[in-house]
Amino acid sequence: MSLFSKPKTVLWPKEGSLEIYLDSQDNNLFSFETDLWQEQSDDSLRNLATFFHQNKINEVYVLLSDAYVSTKTFIYDSVVTSLNPNEVVTLAKDSVDFKIAPDSVTFDLEADNNRTLVRTRIFNQEKLNILLNNIQKLSLKIINFETVSSAAAKLYSNFDSGQYFFFYPINNHDHVAILANKGNVYLTSIIKKTLPELKKLLNHSQAYFGNKDPKQYFPGENYNEAEICQRFNKATNLPLPVLSFFISKAPSAAIIKPTMENNTINSAPTNRNLLPIIAVFIITAAAASVIVWFILNQNNKNAEINNPTGEALPTLMPTSIPSPSPTLAEVNKNLKIQVLNATDINGQAATLKSELTKLGFTDVATGNSADKVTSNEIRLKAALSSASAYFKQNVPAFATAEITELKSTSSYDAVFIIGADLGAATTTTSSPSATPTLTR
View 1 (cartoon, one colour):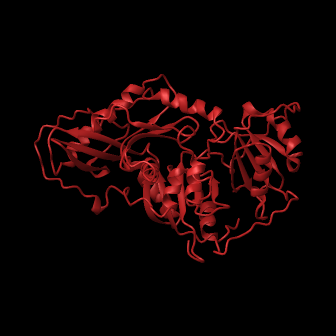
View 2 (cartoon, rainbow, N blue to C red):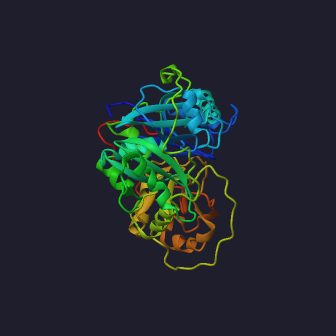
View 3 (cartoon, one colour):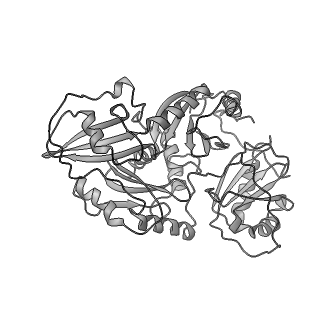
């Protein structure tokens, strides 16, 4: 980053929340309880607009949910150089649960021996229009769109440019399964923890590439987000899809509004008989769930897993819960913890993270809180309410902290909100290149 330049900003709109990432080592994550996938009024966006205005952010990159931009690949029984979009719609119409039209589908044709791979991206235009309208209300210029799957695959192509299945967690319940080859995505599916059906998913790799046993990458088993961030000298709390925007080999503009002119496909009519080897398919919730089961169980065993998405929302208004009976029982050091600074004192989140690390916790993310609080607070999931005694005993600054309940859907197990001076050294060392510090 050049001297005095502003850090890149990535918006990750999720259902019920918005995460904002900055290309900086500290104070690089902000969470808001604003759903840009739902229609928002100017009034409901006022606080968010003020945040962007105060921090002089007017250009952003945007991550799109794979639930609203689905990638499917079909096989055409001969080599073709053009295809009518209506034929692609016919192939794809049963593979998604939303209405599609020719102007909401883009595709690439890849000749392969005596056949053609039709790599198709299917847009939920209704949802995308809502997102674009909300971003326009915020007076933000969009530099580029990428799906979570495309950004993750392009980032990981720095390490593996071959064929593989990549499983990326997008919340506590869902993973996106990504079939990639040479950094391009051929298949995406949102999968859940259900009955095992791994073979159905792996068969697609065999049909596309003749590969019966593609490599499979699982979070915490054979890839670790924090370690990958370190290789690029970036903050270790960045999710891989976000990191892809911040490295020199940035994602290309592969995802843009489907109705834009430069997405127009050669639509010369054709009467060819479509005989796709891969029929229009829907990967059900049962598909590949054995992998999800394995992934979710790994999260409890591997202390190196770094939570990428972080859906703990500091702007939530949690309901107070009764303080549990004090117990000094040891707690699981694999807990996913988020530390948010709600004060104007720089470095407090890093100070508390250091204390938690000394206690043995390995998965601690930091950021600034969008909540305005004046006292320290610990938010715990209901199943971990007994851990409050441990934290009060071992984290002196939170000995009298209020204990509130964290939503069960949060990606974090515990969230520390710093509302008062910790009373410790909070001076941070800045690099010679000046990076703007976000004001609250």
